[in-house]
Amino acid sequence: MLNIILFGPPGSGKGTQALKLKLKYALIHISTGDIFRAEISSQSSLGQELKSYMDHGQLVPDELTFRVLKSYFGENELQKSQGIIFDGFPRTLPQAEALDTFLSERNEPIQVVLSLLVNEDEVVSRIMLRGQTSGRSDDNDETIVRKRMQVYREQTFPLAAYYTSQKKYVELNGEGSIEEVFTALSNHIDRTLALTESADMV
Ligand code: ADP
Image 1: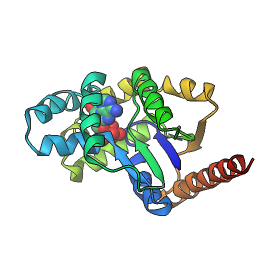
Image 2 (image 1 turned 90 degrees about the horizontal axis):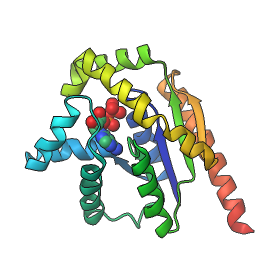
Image 3 (image 1 turned 45 degrees about the horizontal axis):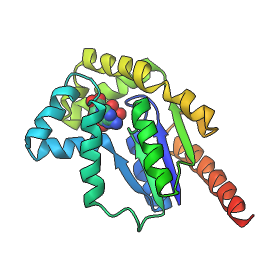
C-alpha cells in the first residue's frame, strides 16, 4: 500500500499532480473539494450547506466534512487499489487525527506527506486564471481567494509540524513546470516505496 497526502496552499497544483500520480501508481484519488462539488451539483440540502462555506472561502466544519466522507467511503471500494492519494484533506488537526485513527485501524498508515511550496502571489494569480474557465465561484473573487490563503496559513499549515513530528513531511518546490514538479514528486514516492519494501523484507 502507498498512502500519500499532497499538501500545500490552494492553487499549488495538488489536483493536477494528484491526477497524474493516480495514473502512474494506480492510486485512488480522494479530493474533498471534488467530493463536495459533486454533492453541490446533486442539489441536495447538504450540498447547499457545503456551498455556503466554500463560496466564502471558509473551511467546511470538521463534523460536516466527516459526515460527507463517511458516506463516500461507505459507497466506494478502497480495497482494490495500490493505495490512496489524499488531496485537500486533511486540512485541520482534528481531520489529521481522525485520518490517522481510521488508517491505523486498517494497518495502512500515511507513509509520506508531500508539500508543494508556492509563493502566495503566484497561487493567487494561478487561481484567478483558473477562475476564468473553472466555473468555480470561489476562484473568481480575489478577496475570497486571499481569505482561502489566510485560512490555509492559520488552520492548515500547522499540520506541517504534526507530520514533521511523525517524520513524514517533505517539502518540494511547486513553482516549476507541471512535468518538473511531477518528476520531483515521483522521485520522492519511489524513494518511499523502496524504503517501505526494504522494511517489509526485515
Ligand atoms: P483549493 O485547493 O483550490 O482550495 P479545493 O477543491 O481543495 O480547492 O477546496 C475548495 C473548498 O472546499 C475549500 O476552500 C473549502 O471550503 C472546502 N474544502 C475542501 N476540502 C476541505 C476539507 N478537508 N475541510 C474543510 N473544507 C474543505
